[in-house]
Image 1: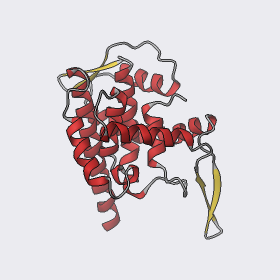
Image 2: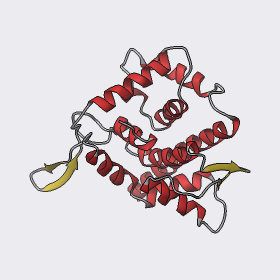
Image 3: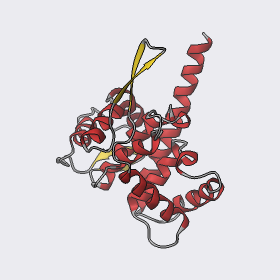
Length: 225
């Protein structure tokens, strides 16, 4: 089953038993999903960087409603913006997480369950309906990290997103984590893809970290007031 980068990232960010976003990625994932959309559009050869600003190379449709909406949003912008701007704007305004959850339900990978907190407040949980796609994804990630050989560009990009969203401890077992962190750092520095793509991957992942840090600082300031 074909999944987009943002769909894969969201699957990894969900706790399999609880059906909620894992605590370590509770803030970062929103921006990580936005970054994953931008990277997916880059792999479609729709976006590029020019003087550290995101530009549209090709505004034609991808056939994916979410990707096309983001592409149009960037194309219709009155001026060129940085990856950080788009990561924060898309993350905060386009309800990406819920839209991706709906898509994964439609693909019968997740199911939606209503839960009660203290028998009063309702919330939706998203446990797996079909665990095989995520199991296969995790297998491919570990092969890419721990085995030598050629790696798919999208898997390498996903590794950088996993790191930026604080998901290494979620994806890897305790005895794998130290080695995984070193390997992901080394893999991210390799010439896995062309210079242009490598640059936008780096800029987007830096933007995710900055956006997450900014959001956490704002939340802390609001709480203290």
